[in-house]
Image (tube, rainbow, N blue to C red):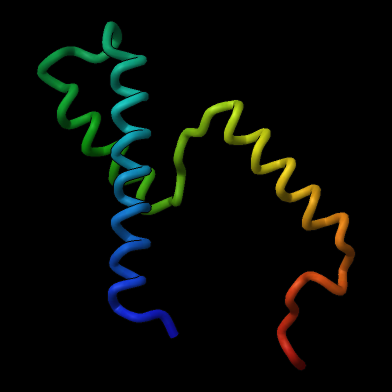
Length: 85
C-alpha cells in the first residue's frame, strides 16, 4: 500500500502533466479559440487529461521510453514481475 505522501506526490505529478498538456493544446489552438473561452477550454482539457491519464510527450521522450522498454523486454519473461497465483 502506498503511503499518503507517495499518493499525493503521484497525484501532483499527474496534475502537473495534465496542466502542461492543457497549456500546450490551448497555446497551439490560440487562434481558433475565442479569447473569452480560453480559460474554460484550458480547464476542460486539464480536467479531462487528468481523469483519463492523457499527457502530451515529445518525440525524444517517446524514443527514450521505447529504448527503455526494449531493454526490459530483452531481459526475457523471467525478469517481468508476475502476481503469484
